[in-house]
Length: 474
Image (tube, rainbow, N blue to C red; front, side, top):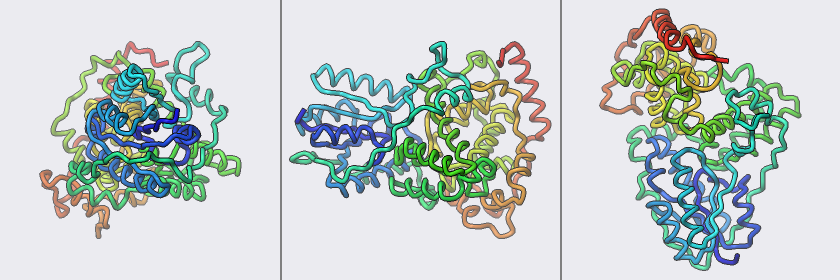
């Protein structure tokens, strides 16, 4: 128990509210933090991989401030860990759990191999409030609908966040580390990186400041104003939760304090945090949600594949201002307002009858707050093939939605240069962020609608109703 402990850092890039780190410090062992660029991490989409690199750099600085270091290594995780064990004489490898299928398969194999070699290999909680296997229905199964899931967890005790350690004991000699710049984690972003960087909120300190600012102001009106994309009414913490720059217990207890202080929107904010938990609950119990229809009865639905229509959607050139503004927001800021995500997903899967996986993969490529559970559940929810009841006939109308949630066209004008008399920075930045190969010109006229909304809705309802006439949606 005196040999060094290797901390395999993944999506827990923080010092505060880190259960693994608490146990490591209490053990009295020297701790060797290591971040591994393995095949699973290499496979990330362009925006997520670039943003992860920024987070790794920020976390390395935070570790240095408490007398530690972040060792960077590239290669298969098991191979790298074995090498580090030998280099520092480690007796244990610890990490915080992840729940997507690729990570589960990798981590299971790593744990089995290390334990067979006589090493202590331990996975910890930390990415979620409740481990998925600890939440069950009265019959012992898993929840398939959000509302009863919320009711089952809302009154549970959640441990308070742990403080960040002031110091972290290191090994007698530090192992060599790769240079993060050599990894070129932002290479696939090309010129878009400079545009998105203006909007990224990177690192633990920035995440804590973002939470504090939200709780000091917007949380009060969160329930009423969160659907208005032109307003600063949401926490925007999805970016930081994705990389573990802030822990969910910190967010939960901050929301609970706001609720106890009588802030009207706090409960709804907590419900959204638990919506994230529900997505991971489903990911754990039904991992096929990331690649296959969650409802198998949808497997024979005649989705349209990728094509010219999907390409116009991708480029923010559908002629539907709410849809196009949302897509352009993603290219400029790296994120997209939640109401806008629902609109663009509904438009692609219903008005264009395009396979939800086309959209899921594009979001995976472009979002800096990409999350495997939330992305999968969100797309299947919008398409109607996922959880919740009777969704197949819910078709969002982008025109009425934008009239309701962007009545003064502030959001549309912010991101669509062709609609503004004098385009602002973000509207112009869209043309600087997207691939040159798209050949987009800010001086060109705004495109005409791809499809009449009433016609598209009717076509979708007919196709969906025909396929789903025998499905029980209860």
